[in-house]
Image (cartoon, rainbow, N blue to C red; front, side, top):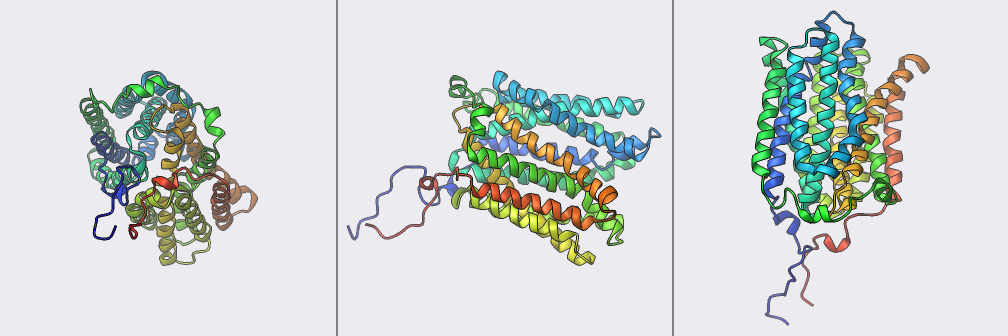
Length: 422
């Protein structure tokens, strides 16, 4: 009736609730820990190849040190998912952090190349443990109406830490190449202690309901079109954002554009800036317009930018395209992770399902640079443009797979604008 306020039902689909609902304290603890972890990783990443070369090995052997971490992450991912389902997310998260801390500290005392290789590889095991368990905790703790915003906040923390870490690492390297490893190990010990004490005894940290419901199996998850699409887009994103972006973009800047190493580093910063810009809005959009539109848009934007990189004729255009590519990644990631969380749901564990999602990204990160290298060195010598076009085409294929997938965010769960009272 006119003159009376419109009644509202206390349901999760109230207008604007996704903006008003607070992120649970437990998740804020995980976000803070992610920032510390990312800073620490950024400390050692720039100096790791140089540290390996100090043992009188070649460039290839130094590159293997970097690949060993990703390889052990990939191989151990299924076991990490199994541990999450058997022991729970929080214990696996903390043990994983401790493994990385100890292995990183051991790297600082490595006496030869092979010791460094083994210690760095062991760190990959711990990394996949805390990565899978962190995703599992976020799935269980994040209210469905703000999953996109939570994923965006978590990604932002990692991004900011990844930007600040290399800067701090460069300063610490002046005290010796072994010092950043010790600082990173100390940061991980602090992060594990914070998570242990802040989540200890909380009702959300070890929700009994999740133990009473059978975990979601990979076989059941694969039957869901959204999970299948997420595997494909995760592979494409790993190929582009973690493989080609890190390996090929700096080489292209030097070999084709004739730019120095400073421009190569700046290009990665421009990618990060574009991602940060998109993350300011992509999480909330994923909670309002849906996961699927954001994933498809992000894939198309990133794919177009990666394909165009090979045709950028000068540094200014090159850096501008880098920003656009980062925007695509920032649009994609929160919605993609929220979609996987929707598939699993809050009431059950999905360690192996999350491990499969992570493995698809790691596979892309491993195969992307290899295929690009074969194209440039063997098939079409010097054809950076073709390698970038293949990368962009893979993103378009992933977007096509998502077109046929279901939307995981129910229409009833999306905030709707206020209208006239009926």
